[in-house]
Structures are given as C-alpha cells and as structure tokens.
Length: 308
Ligand SMILES: [Zn+2]
Ligand SMILES: [Zn+2]
Image 1 (tube, rainbow, N blue to C red):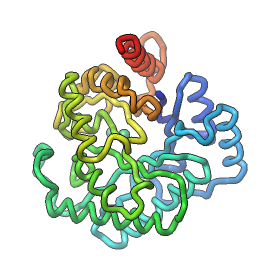
Image 2 (image 1 turned 45 degrees about the vertical axis):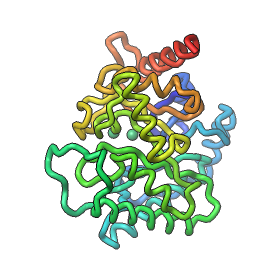
Image 3 (image 1 turned 30 degrees about the vertical axis):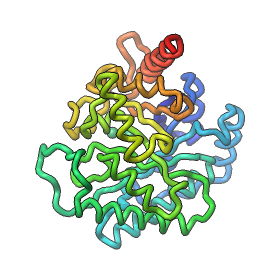
Image 4 (image 1 turned 60 degrees about the horizontal axis):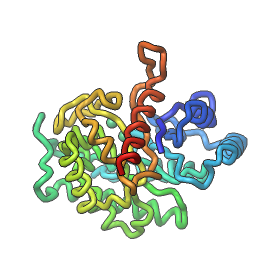
C-alpha cells in the first residue's frame, strides 16, 4: 500500500480526492495546522463529507488513513506546564482522529531536553539507554497513560516515529520505542512508524540486502516489527549516522534500494501503509514526483512477486 502526505488546504476532503486521482492506496494528513496550539473544532458537515468520501472510496474502516500529530507536542518535556500543554494537544489530536475514523496517529516521541549531546556526535546505538534518556522515556509513558485514561476505549493507535536523534530527541534508537511500548498500561494503543530516512540518518544502514535484513531483525528484537503500523518512505540526503533529517526522492539518497526492497518484499508489510513525505514537485517531464516515486516502489514490489 503506497501513498503520500497530502495537503488539506481548502478542506480536509481534498487530500482524499487527490490521493484517489493519483492512484494511491493510502494517505497521510494533518487534521489541523501542525504549528499552532489552537485549532477550530471540526465542523459536522466536514466530518460527514470526509466519512462519506471514505465510504465511497471503500477506505472507511480500513488501515489506509494516517494522521500526523502537531510538531508542538513534546510528551517528554521535563517542564510540568509544557508537558501538560502537550498532553492536552495530543488528546485533541486523538479526538479528531477518532471523529474522522483515522486509525493511526503518527507522533514524534519527544525531546528529553536538558544537556544536549556534542555536535556531530553519532547516536550510540549499541549502548544501553542513558539515565537522561530514561527520564524522558518515563515522561512519555506517563503522558501516554494519562491520555489513554482520559479517552477510554478510543480506537486510534498512537504510532511513535523513529527519529534521526537531532538535539535531545528520543526515538532514534529502536530500544527507545520498545521500552515505551513495554511500559505503558495499554500497549495495544501504541504502535510504531518506521521512517526510512530517519533510521538511515540515525545510524542504521540498510544499503545492502544483508544489512537491511540485519536492521529489520534488530527492530524486531528491540521493538517488534508486528507493531509497525505505518512506514514513512523517504530517501535520505544525509549519510548513514549523519543525524540530518532531510528527505530525498526514492532512489536518490543514501538509504539504498535494498532498504525499500527489503520492506516492500516483506510479506508481513504488504498491508502496512507506506507514505511518502518527499517534496511535491514535478520532474523535467512534468510528472508529479509522488507518482514517479510510487511507480518505482510498485515495480520493486512486483519484481519480488516474480522471484518468490
Ligand atoms: Zn516521517
Ligand atoms: Zn523527516
């Protein structure tokens, strides 16, 4: 299942219409402005139109719709006031997903703040989680528990996203994601989003078939691949371990084709949405890059079927 993050400008339903027009299987949206604390509540009319469109496409009650939370949320903040503000905003994000029948809410785990690591220092992926980081992870667990307790029985799954580990951001090490899920009171409400650019820039090298398999095995061991509900399919401008979060078109970065191949050829991931977050430009032939990238990925998936 391949799709893209599409704009909701002019009305949320426009993202669905565009996804359908471009032959996508799934889509990611923001349900509100991702850079603002305040959002207007959803209007009944818009919700009805959204759901009737989903039904018309046969996408309602499926795993084809993904939302991304606000960039302002920091569930790991050591400051009580900003953590409470983040919890309130994250609650609203989940409320909106629930109203719009969106099963997955991709969320950045958060930044522990405090002493930053040295500039250019690579992520130490082979060492145990540090005390500072453990403090941040505990705050994320507490935040999620508080959110889940306030919204009992909600279906939307919070999908913690892998990060490059810039600043004091958590989630660059698969162990962080596993630790959070293992410690929350309702683990069924927590899943993961695996971003190919972020893991590469974070220090996981998937650029050959052997390395790619090893990385997926590591993820499985440390967090559980069965909990990956969403993939973000972005190639990486920065080198392996660069901690640079810049997305490139598929096949034009440092991830390597085997990174994408190992995922699209994996039978367990066939029905997991794979979302592009690459720039929405056109190539020299005037083709939309989303369409070009998805065609490349579908070809990789097809070759796999032939060879199996
Ligand atoms: Zn992403
Ligand atoms: Zn990114």
